[in-house]
Amino acid sequence: MTLDAVVAGNRLLHYLALMLVFGSSVFLWKIAAPGLRVQIDRRLMLAARMAALLALLTALAGLPLQAGEIVGSWQAAVDPAVLRKLLPTAIGQTWLFRVLLALLLLAVGMLRQPGRLRGVAISAGVLLASLALSGHAAMDQGIHGFLHGANHAAHLLCGGAWLGSLLPVLLCLRLLADPVAGGDASLTLRRFSSAGHAAVAGVLLSGALNTMLVLGRWPTDWSSPYQLLLSLKILLTAAMVALAILNRYVFVPRMKSAAPAAIAALRRSTLMEICLGMAVLALVSVFGMLEPV
Image (cartoon, rainbow, N blue to C red; front, top):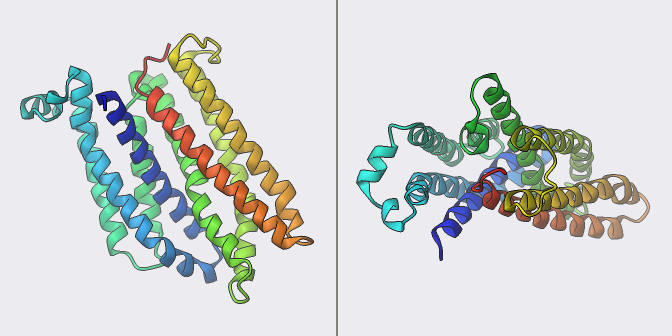
């Protein structure tokens, strides 16, 4: 396996872990009905803790892998002399800051009680937004660099809120038939249908602005690997938006008259959204390492 493939794989796992923790915790903290919050949180707690641990491990691997990528060899990734040279630089300081944030997230996630989600949501959100401190958004200086970084952070948070919420949405769909929890599950899904508009709009607007800030135009030159992969990301995101619209305006209204069929359709559609979201993150993990030309 090539070094670039390992770097991209590490980035993908980091994105997935953070978005799961952030999106699910925000969903349970702000959207889930109070009577359902602890019940779903107990079911997701092990996965959330494992994701927080994965976020820390992938953050720790970031600097060695980046050292290997810069030098172009596996040896540099495990060479203490190379790592010591990188540590005082902006790359190394950003890495150290993010590792400390990842440690905080893991500690908060391990020590909290079921239903206590504010600390997890905030720490995961700060760690997710801090990804804007590296990559293409960190290449600009001055006010342009600040706006680019802020927009990228907003893009990450909106994407995490959307994609990370889909797993607890699946659990809510399973609880609709429960005679005790069904009413709360229905209320939670209606709340998510409304709140989802803001997350989707945020992803689209910040993504479009991000493209303009990086390229200055739409990615129409498909001879460029960066623009080709970015175009594929836009296409997959559009498919996710189409599924979200289908869920909100077709399947959710049908739950009143044809509940079992509508719930099954919602479950399939949500699973497709998750798969598309993972594909989007895989593309981001690759083209984020490419020259934006």
